[in-house]
Image 1 (cartoon, rainbow, N blue to C red):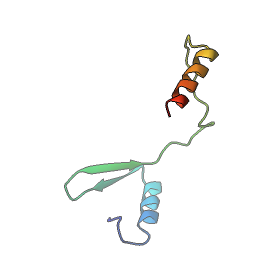
Image 2 (cartoon, rainbow, N blue to C red):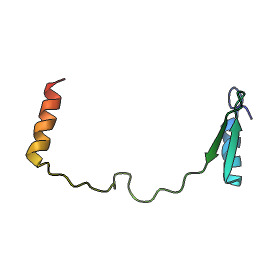
Image 3 (cartoon, one colour):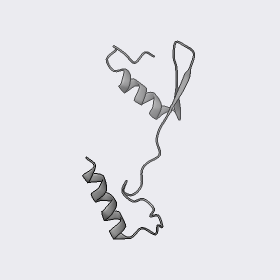
Image 4 (cartoon, rainbow, N blue to C red):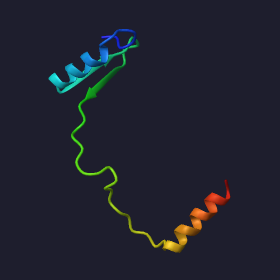
Length: 71
């Protein structure tokens, strides 16, 4: 299935992906790509684990000011 220049190609590709677990795409040079449906996202994309550091608020503010001053 060629994706360039044909109307409805992306829609048909999405339909195939929903019907199957994955879709294989073979390029002219023989390389193969596999498209898989992404698992459903849960929670907020901003909900990331924190990190422990010895940097204080003052250290962070100083680094931000220095970075802005370099612009």
